[in-house]
Image: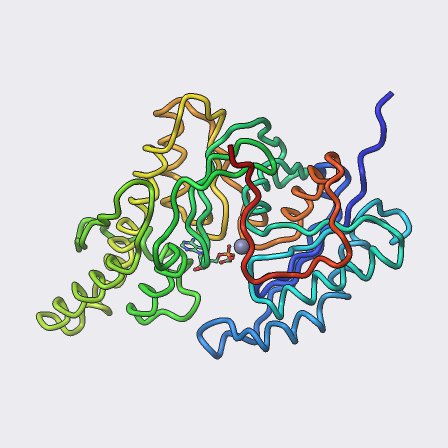
Length: 347
Ligand code: KG4
Ligand code: ZN
């Protein structure tokens, strides 16, 4: 006889979004995200304001997730929260709240690694959002966000092997910096992408990324975009107004190409599929190119729906689900941590 799958409440508060979700097994019953708007005027996330906003929104966000799922606190089997990495003041709010709920209900608590959660989001099922989950190990994962650019060989839910990462800026950060050079408001990544659809990617060319192996370096490319722009502006001062779409298309092409190169070089016959994760997985060119690459290499690709690509709590629940089945519960004296190593089994 099949036993009932666990009912898990999960909380995510690593940066500037407060998220709460309820999962029954791998099925997402609710996934609520409250995005903070206080940072817009500052051109970037202000940690102190983020932490304060989390304190105000965490409880209503949890209540909304429970109500949407039609679940009461007393029905839960476990409570999970992001433990790190992220902004410490923000992490503390969600992590502390989750521990308090678990403690008061005598439920197990599960502290979750944020990047592991991004990567395992493909295992979730939600009607109308992600109908079919990809399953099995090992697989290849490319994490692309505002804070991370990492390629993993994922051997098991708690066994991540880092194949390559960025030596400086993350790709999302590089998108946002390019957007700033083009005079677009923060965070400009999505706007660069939107305009790029209308532009000519061959119009401007930049220095190629030279990093050996499977690592990335975006600072050189960023400088190259700046110098190319300054040079062009000397000849044609109105180039940004006249050719903005072409600048966006050319920059997007240059920022995405190194991701595709390394994905292709990292793929091994034993990989059952490849997944994209993180906010930059929303990028239209990246989505198209990774799909085309998958059919060309004969490998399935998991491209997350937007609500699972950007920071959300359902992905925290995806890790909690595996942890619950393996009995990997966290002690109540676990602390949130701004820096946290992704789980791996060496040797
Ligand atoms: O994963 P995420 O929501 O937050 C973290 O960084 O953890 O990623 C946000 C990043 C930002 O840098 C944003 O500009 C970028 O993802 N981004 C995009 C697109 N949508 C979001 N970059 C390029 N094209 C997009 N469509
Ligand atoms: Zn994230």
